[in-house]
Image 1 (spheres, helix red, strand yellow):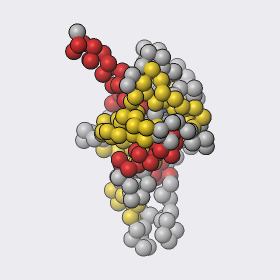
Image 2 (cartoon, one colour):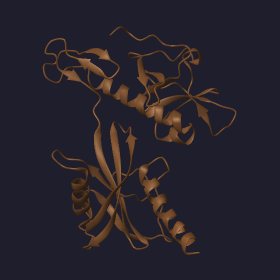
Image 3 (spheres, rainbow, N blue to C red):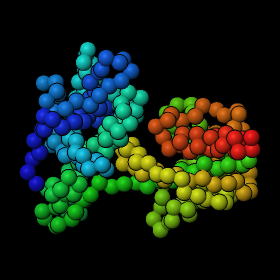
Image 4 (tube, one colour):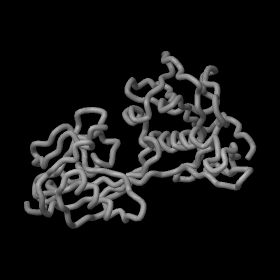
Length: 272
């Protein structure tokens, strides 16, 4: 595949590790993604330029920098998670896919079978010229589940959380499992309780670095909470009127919790 040229009219997501280059706007709280013609001269690609096709069929471009650019009156670099607060939702999602393509490119410089540098064949496929092995961007599938008990919800604080908020039980799918089996296993391993009425809710790409979160709801059935100490530092059922700090709105965990809270408002409106 021939090298990709920078398109002056195309949005370009410029990264250094997990930081993305943003252009400031007249609104101090908002930023935007630059087009190729608008990039500062110091934004020199340190890696191949990639075309990235988004789910709506549009195309953006992305490349890596060797070092982050310093902030000035026009430009700032923000972590991908932090960019959620200052980008439009569509730009944040596009940044997530662009980051995953760069992460895949950085981690597939050599064929895992024979060690030969692979050749890019399509935007999402490399092939080893020696043994023919094909490499595609990997996706790690994880479940996340909201567990209800009347007007209470099970909230946990994982040891890997960056903050003091409480979230939902989550974990990675293992080989040979269905998603529902994964939900039951993770809940039992992490909390020691049994659940029923497992129902699919929604899914969300999770580019930290290359995940897919699959959300479920379930009802408490039986058992006492016994936390998996190496995974969780705290966890309990919380009443809807006395909730601890919740996850940010960028996550499907928060959408699940907000949906659960809204269900009580709808129930009251129906009763009224």
